[in-house]
Image (cartoon, rainbow, N blue to C red):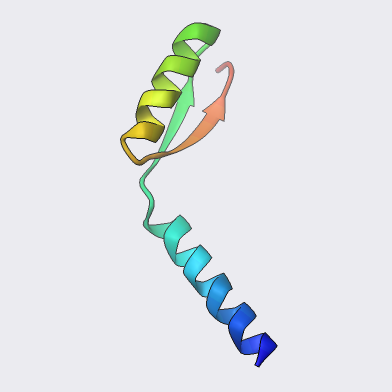
Length: 53
């Protein structure tokens, strides 16, 4: 029973991660980085971060 529950929870978590839109945010300016990252997250995106190119 426990293994079935764990597998179900895992599949739900993976499904949610795979269905979320992703964006790679690369910005040198910290203020811009935080603002744009916040806006993308608020719009439902998963933000992948790189602080410089």
